[in-house]
Length: 341
Image 1: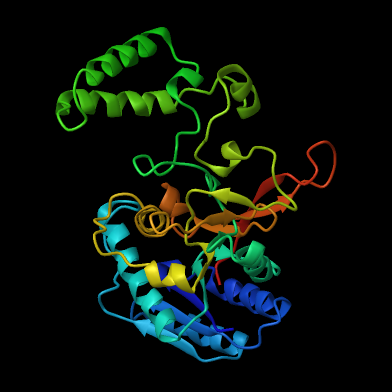
Image 2 (image 1 turned 30 degrees about the vertical axis):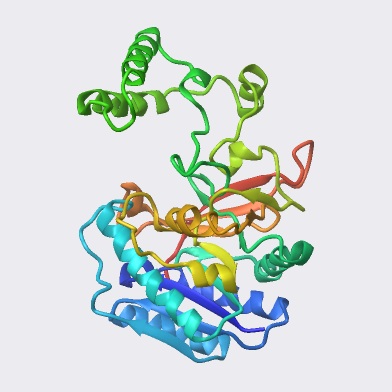
C-alpha cells in the first residue's frame, strides 16, 4: 500500500505544522504504516522550508517540498476568488505529486488541522467498508460548525435553517415574501439584477435571525430535511459513527486512487471553495461516495486575523466527545489559547 500525505501552506499559515507533524507521526504508527510519501506545497519562504525540515526529522522520511514563487500570499480576502484560486493551484501541485508517487491513498491535510492518533486508521477502515463503498472519507473539524452534511449541485451546502424556519420580524418576513414572489415570475436566467441584489441583502438579514428552536424542535415543527452542516444534518451524533455526506473539505480527508485521479481543477473559477468544486464537479458525477467520521474529529487551530481578529493570536478548537449524561458521545468543542511554534 502506497500512501501520500499532502499539505499546502504559505509562510503565514505554518503556525500549527510542527504540532501537525507530531500528530501525523502518531497516526502513521497507530495505522501500522512505516513509510509514506509526503508532499508539502507552498511558497519559497524560509518558514516553510524550516517546517519541511521538521517534518523530515519527525517522520523519518524524505519530504517532497514543492516551493514555487507563484504561490505567494496575496491581498485577496479569504474565500474570495483570488485566494481560492491560489489554494486550487497549490492543491493541483500536491495532487500531481501524489499521483507521481503512484499513491493508492492520498491523505489531504490543511496546515491548521491536527488529526487524532487514530485518524488515518479510521479513515482507511471507512474507505474499505463493504469492499470500498466509500471512495473519500473525512474527519470533521470545526469551522464555525463541523464540516460535512447535505447539499445539491446548485446549493453545495444546504441552508441549515430556511427563512420559514427562523423567527423573522414581520416587516422582514413581508419584504422577503414579496421579493420571493417577484423573482418567481422570472426564469432563473432572466431574473433582474435589482431583485437579486435585494434578495442577497435580505438573506444576510434573515441569517442573522435565530432559528425557530434547536434543530430537533425545528425538525418537529417544520419537518425533517437534508440540512447543510454536520451539526444540523446529523444532530446529536458522535462517538462510534460514520455517516454519508454530500460534501467534504480537504482539511483531514482521505481519497482512494480513483478519487485522486479525478481531483483536477480545470474549469474552476474561484466561486465557492475548491473542495466543493471537486466534490460536486468530479466525484459525485463519477458515482463516488463520501463519508464523514464524527467518531474521529480533528482539532482546528484558527488564526484570529482570518476571522477579523488580532494578528498573532491563535485559538485551538479542541474537539472531544461528551463523557457523561444523556449526551454522552456527542461532539463537543472547547476553545483554548494556542502558542504558535
